[in-house]
Image (cartoon, rainbow, N blue to C red):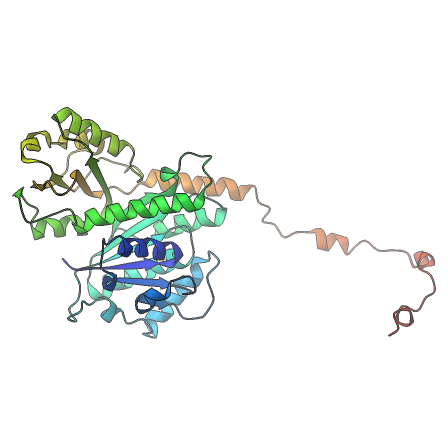
Length: 368
């Protein structure tokens, strides 16, 4: 399955660049979109698309980047047919977007371009949405608007920056952003199947099963548990996987209605009987309609349990909480026209008060 990665806006650009630098996806399969290319390293010149208008950034205004994206599509300044083709000119099987939800350039343009690609090219669209910690009211509103616009036709993964922070008092935004981008790379690597090998396998995910996992509409959650030491029993496996699932950076789904579950196991052959985590997943996320498993024994790679849960209910409660925080914050802002200037115009002085001003000719005094 061939895929292209579109990094949208400043946050999406950084996440996509980290994915290429971490050898998770080839640079030739990455395109960086932004309202301004000034912050993108020159080494990515061949992969950069700058939206029309030369606005130098959107200032968190999603409407600007939405309009830019529509103009670029209408006037064909973005050749999406070429961007969605491989080196041989064949259309790829899926496009993956990564963007923040609270910014302007990525949050606004992603929904427009994703909708166009899905409708025009009949291509499955996957969106990695990174929800930044609320720094201002505008960011919260952008997040709600973003999720209102993506509809129910895309595969969506969500990473919350507040869940990678050390706590509510952690204000190191650059470190939090770096952790979120690293989490995106881990999830993307699992999603692309980088852990799956053809050698030394007992049970495999075939192409049809992988396609189903990657293109199921709705909410997708991914988790990878790495075992540093030899696995001694099934209780150890389930305990560590349960801890990983308890600490994921993704919002919990509203319901336990998973459509598909993919499991990737890698261990020593003698540890195979200890690799069964279905009861853990069922307890937390419910029973999947379909379960696909890949089991391999490669002692040159880390022991892992990779989990892809597809077709979950979108986390409405999380977005509702952001919306309520937005409403509460806006209720404390004075949105009425400031009557200060209208009132001050009524403050007049008596003509007799000129007595206090003196008789100087001001122009003469200033030598004019």
